[in-house]
Length: 214
Image 1 (cartoon, rainbow, N blue to C red):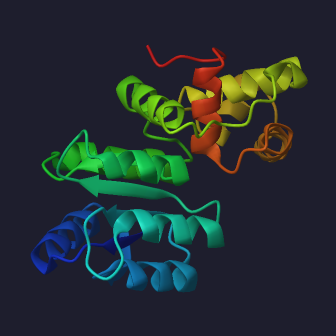
Image 2 (image 1 turned 135 degrees about the vertical axis):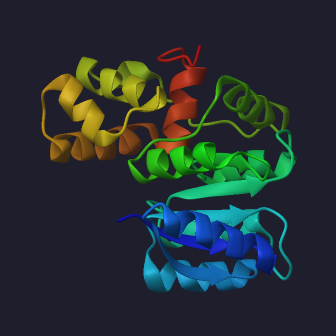
């Protein structure tokens, strides 16, 4: 059962999400009304997926996401936003959020996003990935510059599959290796490239031409 933490300051919206998720067999383990509560609940409960509203009082969703990922780099955060081009989405993804879902998305899209992120995927479409990369460049904030020539052939393949949205389990099946081996290889890749999480690794792979999202 996927364990989900909800973080949104609108009670009716949270109640609607809880009702939907629980009707589909997911478990809502907490509801945060602001960013500080989200950080505390995430640290206490270690949810499988965090649905994080961008605009919240006291501490916004981007800063809360940054704090959560500093505490636990493996946390899986999906940002909830009203607008596809919300600039805060870029900041959250740069910090390591797995992607975003629009507030007006239908139930099937939300459930699909949760299941995909719980399985280890990142919700990076080509437009979002390019916009984030452009944002890095415009602010002169670049991803590490080590060349991917430092990676061996198997590591490059794993990085490509990660960027294309495959979970660790799916990568293991495609390459006929164990899921533990995939986790170990990813850890080595992150260390070699000085990356902190899967989202940054996916962006790196796209920027370096290792993978594309076409």
